Amino acid sequence: MTILDRAIVFATQAHSGAVRKGSGTPYILHPLEAAAIAATLTDDLEVLSAAVLHDVLEDTNTSAETLRAQFGARIAGLVEAETEEKYRALPPAATWRRRKEEAVARLRAHGSRDALIVAMGDKLSNLRSIFQAHQALGPALWTRFHETDPQAHAWYYRQMGELFEPLGAAPAWQEYWRLYHQIWPD
Image 1 (cartoon, rainbow, N blue to C red):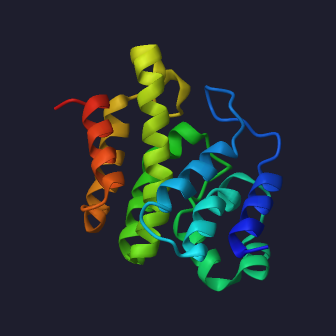
Image 2: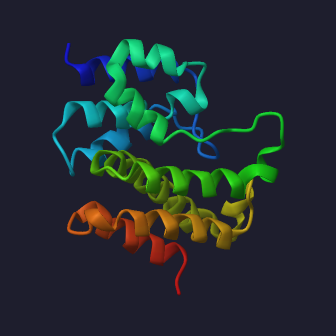
């Protein structure tokens, strides 16, 4: 098996039984979509593996040590660059802005093209889901989230999109901004 094959199996097992917030679709479809988006930007199997694995530290019981042992320092580092600190002792709504500010700062500090590709895959997949739900539910969509203010989400996705500027020639970047402006028209 290639490293990507192993990452897909690992992520599928780690996310087994989990569903996507609001839609109920199997969670694994999100990391697979993130990897498919990343594949439009690179053919580097380690970057694609990181895209598939991008939520295993954040949303499962997988440790950074396990990830590093299974997939090496480069992949683990890319996943860590995309992993939010959840502050589990506090209510998620109370930490939302802090977590998003830290995510933006972490990606800005990491700064590598590979980290941007992994993050782009994740965030564009999220925007696709938000757009579809927005079309179906309208403003009721925002009640699905810990942060219910749509302008807070607009701030976050604008910040991330600006960080993706080095990928500006890519169709994924163009789709990102098209969806952004359809969800939050200026």
